Image 1: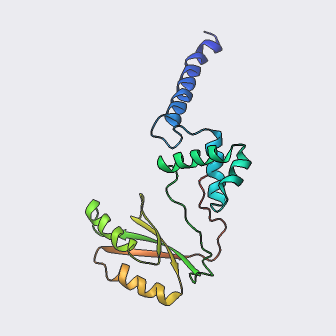
Image 2: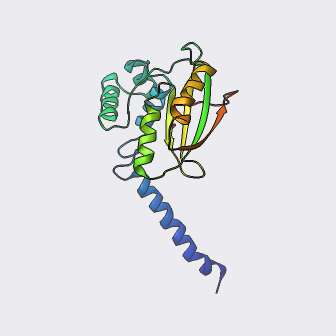
Length: 184
């Protein structure tokens, strides 16, 4: 048996995997469904600076303003564009302290997780709340004015909650990267 004949089935498997990946990436319901290169370029531009005018974006991608506007309206209607927001400078907004908190719950299950996430999400200082896998149950990102606000939040959210087994806090001393865009 030659080396080629032994590798031939492997080549078919690789080809089938590539076809499967292509099919999964571009089937209806995925984020990429119906999007072409120009749509992705428009989305990248919009994520970088949502205040740019339609005329400016149309010029950059080589479309007429009306065609560009129709594409953006379609992307909004399809849900690809979830919302358009302003990103504030935390220091100028008075939220200079950033911390990550991991939380281990005593009781597990959907009801207990949902209850804690609802309580955490209601806190003004909680900017992100995630249910996660692994050694911990929840990860929170906090934006705080000072340590006094953090201490009060710890009382309300962790120390006074009967379902919190333990929590660990990591105060951010330097941000190496903080990106809101999803590059396409």
